[in-house]
Image (cartoon, rainbow, N blue to C red; front, side, top):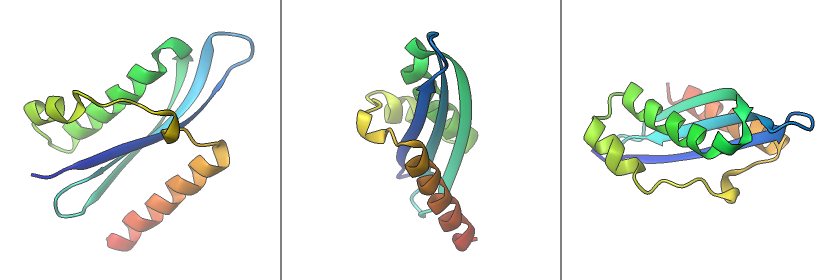
Length: 106
């Protein structure tokens, strides 16, 4: 079973606190080129944003039926990069583009 996965995100600090608002989208494509999207909104401590994104990907893989061993293998070296951060408008445009692509494939 071949999988490709990626994510992109947008976030901002809430006031002068250490809290952030984070929008995360994970994208998974299986060997038959089916796309699976998950978008979530988080609020919480800025120190955990990296873990939140990785946890979302792990849960997304599990929820579409990927076995635990493969989930661990696929996410073992997963790292979030600054290149996956989009400004708000870019984030929204990318998400709408993917939603449109999924809807066309139905």
